[in-house]
Image 1 (cartoon, rainbow, N blue to C red):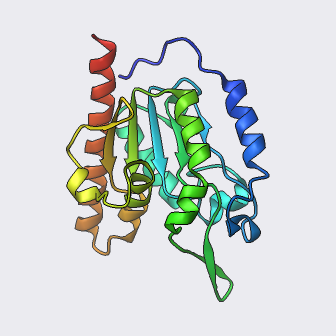
Image 2: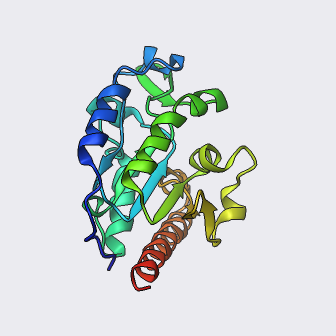
Length: 209
């Protein structure tokens, strides 16, 4: 089990950043989004999980990882004895990018410029929470931190270094949902759980030093 007791990071600063980000117009995504979706969770979390961007439900509710992919992530965290109350959840991009298909809003991948426009907020979250381990969920999150050459497949299984912090790469939980066959979904989910477990073990190793 990951130890969580340590001096409290300034939750008030995260609240202030969230309030500032609510008015962000650094790129055009705010025009079609319902609202900014800032990160949430334990202000002094030892594990910080970074995804791509909010989805349709997150955009409407205003909270990260509350849609189908969030439920997959909750299950995976539960399998290693954690919950979202133990971690800090955020996205590289804080607004939902979408295109209309009938009455549905279909996710579109954010551009490099849109990711860069949100870098200020992600950098502030990292500095404020100061996690021991950062879990990168998918390619966009990885590229936001490590640059355009980042590839999840090549990075998985490695202990990556991001500005003096250990980082672990894994798939975005939405990849489990996209799997066509039950066996493929099970394999994708098992891999996600294994990567999250390794992140938790890295935190434990740091705490035991």
